[in-house]
Image 1: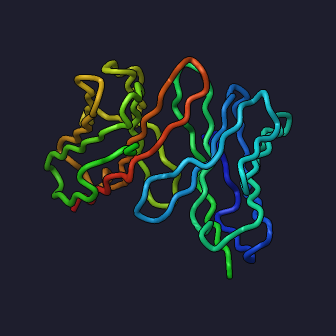
Image 2: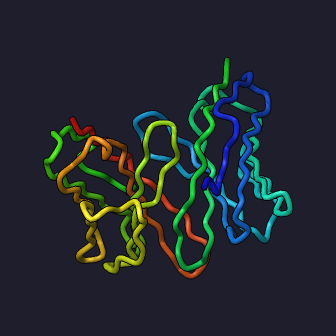
Image 3: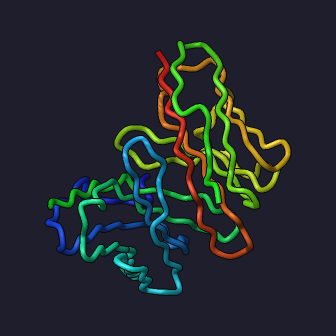
Amino acid sequence: DQQVKQNSPSLSVQEGRISILNCDYTNSMFDYFLWYKKYPAEGPTFLISISSIKDKNEDGRFTVFLNKSAKHLSLHIVPSQPGDSAVYFCAASGSSNTGKLIFGQGTTLQVKP
Amino acid sequence: DTGVSQNPRHKITKRGQNVTFRCDPISEHNRLYWYRQTLGQGPEFLTYFQNEAQLEKSRLLSDRFSAERPKGSFSTLEIQRTEQGDSAMYLCASSLWTRQMETQYFGPGTRLLVL
């Protein structure tokens, strides 16, 4: 059972435009959500996170939105840059005691110059 | 501030051989996690340690897999009698857990190919 889903395997946007990556989850016990970026042959790099007590968190060009009623979160990148081209994973954690992360399948973002 | 390091970065082995991977976490991080990632999938949790105690193991971790963190610093992941299905990227992450939300920082991974 896939508790965290990223339904879009790939996304292509033009440089300077907004990139929106989506993620859905099924487990209502998840209370902490993270986005990671991954380049080929490297480990995931932490981007931004959000607690379930918030509905928005912003860090520079990256904003994460959380809609708990819809069990949906999204990552907005504005403006998109060619260096943002990578695979993006959303991840969820369900307890303050165990930080085990459940990952989605990833979305490959391509930002075209 | 050095990040999480993993060695080796690549490992090719023959089916039936044993392999061992090492992870050095960010200093002062008390939690260390192991994940496995196969092509087209997100990382899957294998096990984690808080200091030297192994607190949880996934059912993905068969009896052929063993992990240790003997002094609460570096960790090793051993796979005995490797199978072709063990071919994957093995990722290590560390975090500082303080009873609040924690952020895990990943190493570059060890890519295993079992022939």
